[in-house]
Length: 573
Image 1 (cartoon, rainbow, N blue to C red):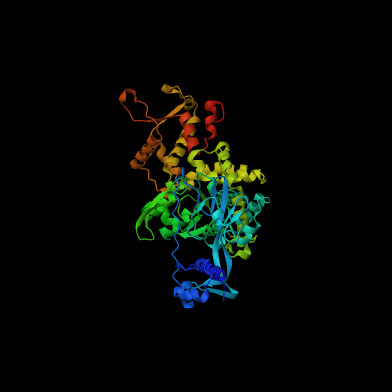
Image 2 (tube, rainbow, N blue to C red; image 1 turned 90 degrees about the horizontal axis):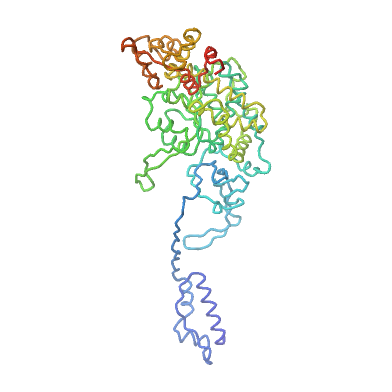
């Protein structure tokens, strides 16, 4: 028989054990320490309890856990939030990817709380989120740090296509002490473009055009470094390689995706919200403002400038209508037989293409990766790592382009990201790249009236420059000072009609009639040109433009003034 001390100790241990298991233990009578005649049998009889009663205590209802009330703290500003897979936040760049993991589980728990052990362990495969920071630290389950240690909030509800993401091997191999060589990655991208696209009779020679497209591809990986982006519009007849160029760019660009013009607006909206590079094949409908849905066109036209958001209504999980603000800022490409309207054209670099007899390029599909000069999967990983490491650097390069480029304003905007990449790569060892592409951007302005046939203002200004140039050849007109005290020209709107008609492409369908004269007059009024007073208030009204105004307008629209103006000022313009 146990002693009273042994009974008390045994009951205390047993009671503590039941409480640790979560059982509700009622007050149990314990024998007093000074009772010298109570044994364990006497205690059971005295309490009226039996062994079954003790066992029942261990099977009693478990107490419901009570969570501590939340602590609310007022913040001075919104917390940092990662909403795009490749972003620059607080001086650090972050890359998000979804990798496959193998989960092994040796124990599971049934609904009644019973623990089941498994030998061998159960295994399953899942895709989970990982975040790689610029300094090489990765976050996620099984990574260096758990996601809870990430100093920002993560909101990435959509999982992009796997072959567009950074691979697990690439994430493990990333080393900030030994980053990818920018010049080497650029050369590989350029060689891929050269392999599939023939730029004969395009804006420049083959090598320079391949550099232009390669810089555009690299620019998509530095989206967060720019304040404005440009669009590419491959243009040409059927079979000229427009779709092939779109495929090459999207296969190498940041989250590249080919979208048909009839694609759903919801999918387009979510892709744009991630900053994906969107390529629209057969985009003739998009060039027609009357044939495109207003929501889709708004999303397209608003996507070239940072800071713009578009509000949309959608239903939440509870089927309630809520307002969602979408960030459409991203790079885009369009391929079409027709040219863009003047609104899209002002945001676009048009790339003319012609059919090629080159069997080496024409008879191969970019989606056949075995034909690539470089293995695509390691190249995509290199581009991810390049964007992650150099993203903060590219932000400063955009400011250098604004200072050093000859183009200004709207003419520079489609080229700014490309030139920023070219400026950075030149510092990284690609000899002469900045000079070649900056020169191409300047030469491109001379072709714009032929490429952007719907830009009537540019056509009128081109005609006005030619009219003034012809007048400058005349000594009498060259010395025409008049009442303004400055070199100027007076002309009638009807004098520009024939010149505009000669400069315009057939797509504009101009006719030599009074309506064209009125349209030219309205355009001159938009340029804020003046009409001088008529002598005696009689005669036809004329327009007046000074040499300074002509120079200012030509610079604003990227038009080069001809040599005929040099004798007027005595110095090159």
